[in-house]
Length: 213
Image (cartoon, rainbow, N blue to C red; front, side):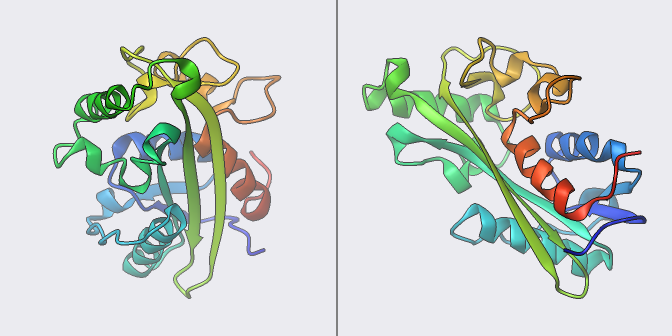
């Protein structure tokens, strides 16, 4: 598979929390990283039906608009009791102001309406799909998932989005209570990424990146 060895990589997101996480994951590889927001590129219409569709839309638009390789992430929270919602519409549940406190309340209210009050009834997963697109049209895609349960009230002020209500399996702290290093599994002795984005990134880095510097 085609490798990224030097130059600038465009992160195809206007979400500063997402850009920050991807920048942290890319830090060991010596690439120059910028974002579509920094370059002043517009947000494309995300009208796909899957995470893969929307990641591809964003990556291709950013690669064409910048003339540089672009990495897009489409991710979201899929709740079993809500038939996979909010899913690809996770950001839309936060409204135009990206109010994720409201989005978390909306999810909780929907769970309460379903009578989903026990941990067994509140299972969910975070999904992330990374798409790397080149200006000449070549693409590569990588998917990562992490299973967990939803807690209420929200716990922790770290991370972003739905992190404060997501308790990953095997842990006693939500993503909102973890440091970035803990959430991504970047600590020494922890070879496997914990977060959905870190798991997708591991596949991407193995296929498309050289050795860390």
